[in-house]
Length: 162
Ligand SMILES: Nc1nc2c(c(=O)[nH]1)N[C@H]1C(S)=C(S)[C@@H](COP(=O)(O)O)O[C@H]1N2
Ligand SMILES: [Mo]
Image 1 (spheres, rainbow, N blue to C red):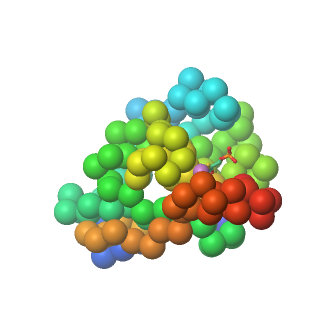
Image 2 (cartoon, helix red, strand yellow; image 1 turned 90 degrees about the vertical axis):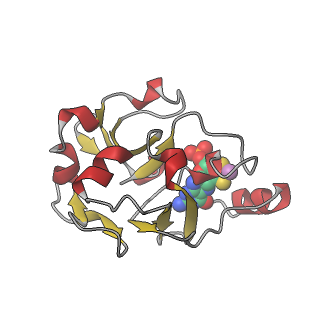
């Protein structure tokens, strides 16, 4: 198992822990661990940590209003109001005792409980960003290149990266 950094936390509003290895996520307090994400979304499997746990360990300032999830791997980014996901967001990071595979959106995939249909709201399925490498906290909305309509969504799926 590697101890390389899987997740970076960015932004001026972050005062605490800014770099997480797989071991850091696994070592997070039991109260932040979600053992079985299939109960949240039957399409998903594995274990996650609650976004609220990351906020706590990273000591994110309460004035943060937006969270931006960055996948540099395939240049996909989503920025949503933090208040809407603070209690519903989680980071899937393991399957049994192993890191989440790329094929499942790993090593880290964001998942929102009760997400809306694609581009029907800010908190939609498209915001379940795969291959999350960086999470940014800010007072203003960050970069977001989610598909805005059915055509753009179809084009993204045709690219074969979704
Ligand atoms: N990194 C990354 N995350 C992504 C996407 C993507 O293209 N790249 N597509 C999004 C969209 S538009 C949707 S609807 C869901 C689809 O998730 P699924 O392929 O696991 O069903 O992933 C979201 N997360
Ligand atoms: Mo989507």
